[in-house]
Length: 95
Image 1 (cartoon, rainbow, N blue to C red):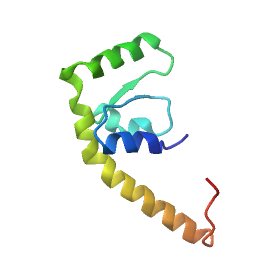
Image 2: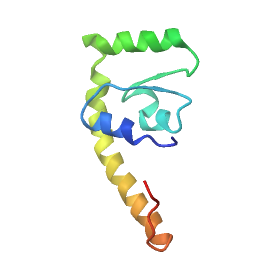
Image 3: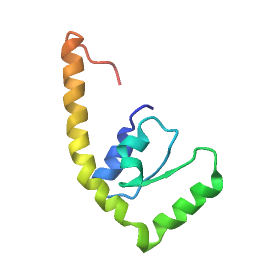
């Protein structure tokens, strides 16, 4: 998925997130690691380390900072979707 709604939803409620650098716009959404942890898509050891780090109290902060970004991002996403729907003549794609 190019832009993960699940990622934005998790960020909006302050859930610490981990995403792959290869996953669509995850690096952009996560502010290159400012709002969550980014890992290489093919490194299981790095993913395991990121999970361990998120479980420790010292790294939970990115999840809290994510709320600062996620709510405005979700609003902009909705606005962009509305504009695209209007441009397409008002027809929404089936979910």
